[in-house]
Amino acid sequence: LDLIKYRNVQTVVPLSTNSQVRAAVTSHVTERTLPNNMRHRMAWFGTAIGTPVGDESDPTSIKGIAASLRNELCLVINATRAKYYYNDPDTREELSTVVDGSFIAAVLAAYRDSFVYPSTTLLNKTVAGVELYDEDYDDYYSEYQLKQAGSSSVFIVESLGGVMRVVDDLTSDNSTIERNNLNIITAKHYIAKDVAAQMDGTFKGRLITDSASYTNTVHAYLSAMFAAYQRAKIIESLDTITVEIDPNRRDTINIFYSYISVYTHKYTSGTYALVV
Image (tube, rainbow, N blue to C red; front, side, top):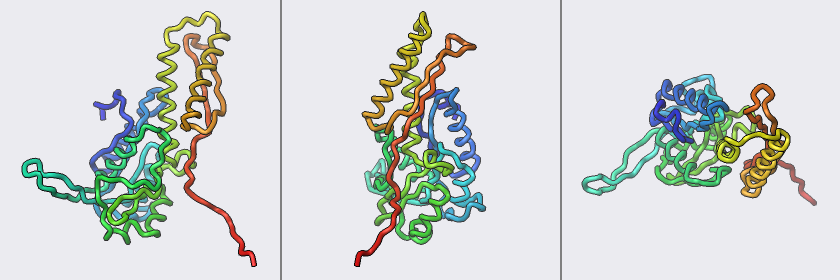
């Protein structure tokens, strides 16, 4: 983890199901994503083969692991085993091996990172690379087990004849809708990094000869950036932008922005009546 501490990394996936490794990676992404560090990244975790969906009171179960993390930067996958096909490097014969949940997490994370659009949702998407086991249906993919896992904010997939389909792309933090949705978090990280880069690239090194004029210029620049985010459908709309010179450090510009996120339609609620 020290090797990637200052590198431009957005996703960390340990190919391990060890709890100490999971704790170390969680600490890493949390610390690196702090505003003072601006190295926004997320962690994807899988579990050992046969790990039960279980209950939140059991810290070794899938639900228990997700509940113990409760972090918008961390995702826990419900699938624990899959078949991975590869070609023997010498004979070119197609072979297969069984992989655990950490490998499945890596496949999902790589698929997510293949999208340029930061607000991409994985909901209902089918993901190639591994083949799930249909015989795991009762333990992991039945409606009951999917609801159980989802209620603890586990990222849930199902097997459609072995094909992996995303049922709900949840982070492990279900304290708010915004913290629970992967596409909202990835968009937030994209904007934070882009704003920092654009501000440094455009304004760092300029002389502030007129404070009021300078803050107005920065404000107009940020407004144009968020208008571009809105046109690109990265945000729904802008809420607030403020720009001021720090009264204690006049070489520092304090900015604040807020916006309305792009949400995913996940549920439909309503009533019906029969007309007779």
